[in-house]
Amino acid sequence: MADDWIVIGLEAWQAQGVQLFGTDVNNWRFVCPACGHVQTRADWLALGMNRRQVDQRLGFTCIGRWLDPLNTATDFQRSKGSGCDYVGDREPNISPITVIITPGEERPTFGWDQP
Ligand SMILES: [Zn+2]
Image 1 (cartoon, helix red, strand yellow):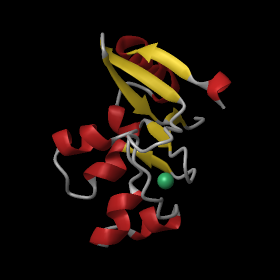
Image 2 (cartoon, protein in one colour):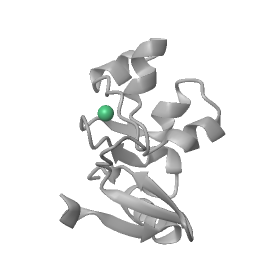
Image 3 (spheres, rainbow, N blue to C red):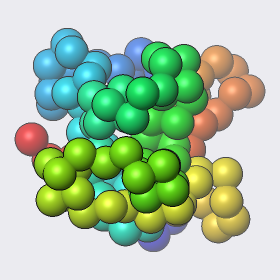
């Protein structure tokens, strides 16, 4: 698995997101490396979190940690599955992408869904 890991700078990673899903970050789709559940920023915002709370978790933590405990999932979200409780700082880190936010600050990040 380690051979598949990608280390990428923040700007290059953002460029990938735009290329795959367009400029609206809310539509970028991430795949949980633990359960395969696909999630978007819009899904997270629908939970009622503010943007800062969402951006701290997006692509880092599976939305399943919040969907079921809060029981706030919409029928549409439930139809896509409920996710799991994976969080990116868990050992072992299985997130396939490491985004270098700033030199010395790296963030394990979920892989992209295929558009
Ligand atoms: Zn998951």
